[in-house]
Length: 129
Image (cartoon, rainbow, N blue to C red; front, side, top):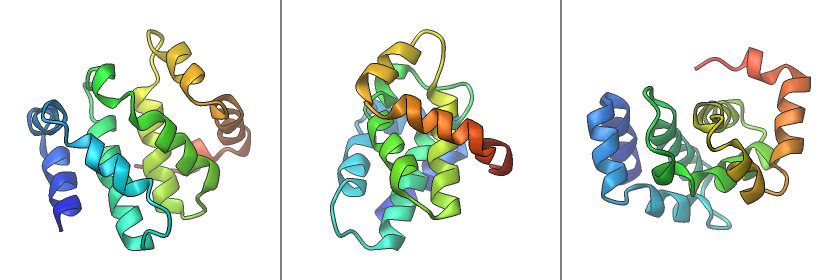
């Protein structure tokens, strides 16, 4: 329920999102989503909550969401669930900007191949937020 509450708060408005980020609300979510053997429902809610923290416009300061990029690329790399893939993909798309693109690429070893896969497959066109 806490994950759901953070996700809803973060999606309400950028002010709430920024408060959650400023107080470190992203890091427990990243830890939870990274746990092996996590129940699928909790994993899905965790990715949804992370995406709400990353994708709203205007985009949050990159320093707040930088730690999410490796987790989100891992989700894109490993998940088949369309909703989870959509949340992770749109979060990455919203996070990638000219001023941080290289930093994200350096952080995530398979990021370029994952982005290429998403672009080639047309999945970015099919996934709607």
